[in-house]
Structure formats: structure tokens, C-alpha cells
Amino acid sequence: MEGQWSGDLIAIAFPDRAAARAWYASREYQAIIGLRTRNACGAVIIIDGVLGDHLATDVLAPS
Image (cartoon, rainbow, N blue to C red; front, side, top):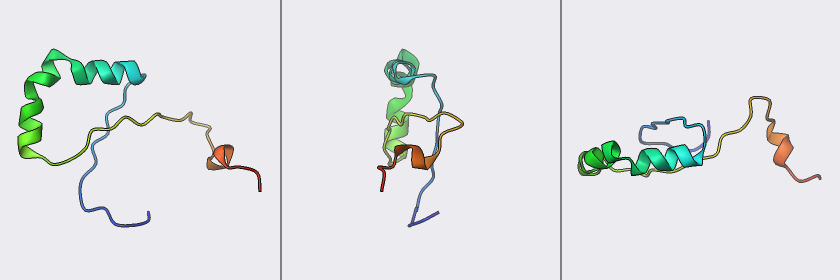
């Protein structure tokens, strides 16, 4: 909504951080990681999700 973004975004959902790390370390992903790194430039990051009823104001300090 704000700022510039010049690339694409790929998001993969996992039930928790342990599952995301297990996927990354899996034999299957490690077998193809070279294909991704040779043909794409990007970062792999983990972002914790939020509950469906989350409001941005839930994390703001009181004014």
C-alpha cells in the first residue's frame, strides 16, 4: 500500500516455526535449493502470523 516494491512475493504458510525450519532443512528442499539460488535473487524469511481477530492497535503503546 505504501512505498515501492519491484519484485514478486511468495508466501508459504506453516503451522509453526518448527515446521517452517523442518521444511527448509528437508532433504527434498535442500536437493533443489541450488536451482532457486542460481535462478532467483531473494530472501527467505520467517514471519510469525497473527490471529484472525488481531487489530493493529493491539500492539500500539497507549498514547
